[in-house]
Length: 135
Image: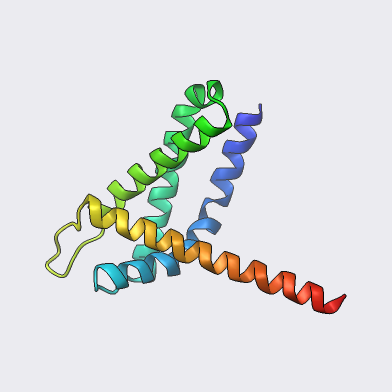
């Protein structure tokens, strides 16, 4: 039952997560590929990769249940990086219209994830500092 609730939450929150991820995908693509990516294309890329990750994690659920926390985290991270890198590498194109490839896709995934994490950390710091000042 927990699996179904978690799956339902993931599906419902997918568009919100994709919307939050769009500017970071655009920025990562702009830095590494030197090509402007439209909002719609970045949103579709986030939806496709997020949906694919939900499907793959649902398929891996029987394996993940038998692993410990460290094993679950390691396998989930490896699968997410491999799948997202492959999808980004295939769907994102360079100036000539060719796919950018797996390694550049991995670069876009890592860069956009690092930028997203940095912004989250900055927001958390602002909240903590503002909370301390209000006390």
